[in-house]
Structures are given as C-alpha cells and as structure tokens.
Image 1 (cartoon, helix red, strand yellow):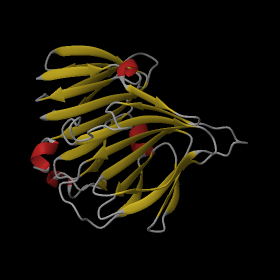
Image 2 (spheres, one colour; image 1 turned 90 degrees about the vertical axis):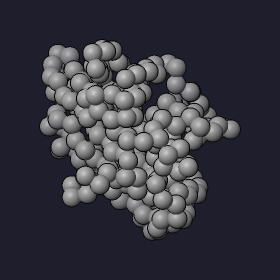
Image 3 (spheres, helix red, strand yellow; image 1 turned 180 degrees about the horizontal axis):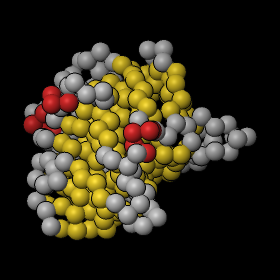
Length: 252
C-alpha cells in the first residue's frame, strides 16, 4: 500500500478576473490530462466563481463529468436542452460521449453577491462514442445522515443501486460527511483518491495515519479499507473515488 498526500497549498493554482481554480491534477493550459491521471480520475478542480460569472458555451467529448457544489449554485445549460441549477447536496452527472456543448455559471447575480464554490471531477469512460446525457441526483439527506454514501458508479456490482450511472465499470464515487467525533469506513481499492472538501479528518489506511485538512488529497494504491475519523465539533466533507484499474488499462 502507498499513500501520497497532496497538500492543499501544493495544488496547481490558476486564476483570472472572476475564477480561482485549485487543481489536484493540472487541468489548465498545455498539460497531458491522461499522463497525470490517478486510476481513471483525470481532473479534480476546486473552483470559486464570482457572482454573475462563469464559463460560456464550450464543447466536450468522451468524458464522464461530475459536479458537486459546496457553496452557492451553478446553472448548467447544454445543447440537449437541459437547464438546471445545482446547489449543495445535488450531484450533476454529464456524459459527453459523441459531443455536448454546455455552459456553467454562478447562479447568483452580481447584485446578490454570492460566490460559487464547486468541485468538478472528470473520469475517463471505458467506451467512446456514447450518447451524451445529463442528470441530477439529490443526495443531500443521505449525506447529512453521516454515513458514507455511494453517489455515482459504473461498477457492475452497483447496477441495482439508485446512484448516478457513469460509463466506467471500474469506478465509483462516495461522499461522506461524518458526524462529530465519529468514524466511517470507505472501501479499499487498487486505486483511491480521497479529497477533504471541508474541515479536518484523520485518515488511517493499513496502519498508516495522516491528518488531512481542507483542500488536502490522498492518492492511494493497493489499499485496504480507508478509515476516516472526525474530531469533536467538526463534520468534514469527504469525496472518495474507489477505482479498480488505471486509465492505461481502460483505454490502451
């Protein structure tokens, strides 16, 4: 087992007049997305968007894109005719497939002055040329209960579960917001990516213990179960990718 911690301050930082992007994997500029992947996860951005701002219509192909809002709301519009505003507790899932054009903007106007903080994650699909689609999944109540929640998966063992379906049979996304002073367990996997979106958590894997704070990530290889402990008065928010292969084996 190996655990590599990417400290919040060591993430790639990119900004313009209205966007501050902190990236666990380099995703802005001339970077090799797939060369920097961990497992099948190729992008994991933590973005803050000013009121009234956002990305105008742009195009994606052959990627599974998941969006998780921490603060504010993001309005999604796409070439399939979907228009929806995602808020905290609602997972957005988009299959780019053969091609989809969409825009994403802070739902708050400049007059309302509410910033948007959003986590966007890209996973390589196991099949190209799929029909593009978009869906929303309200998991707020389940996550707030304190136990880990499987929110998205392409794993065959999860087919009968009510989760967002992604087109990668080797990957699943869990979200946990443990109650104060409690312990939750996430499944071990050949590849794992644990991100602390809020708060502080103690993470123990196969006898190795690390304390992670907001913005830190742990990249795991060949790990057993991942034990997460919260402190008194704290409810950290954890996003965890369980992955059973690498990009190179999915898409040789």
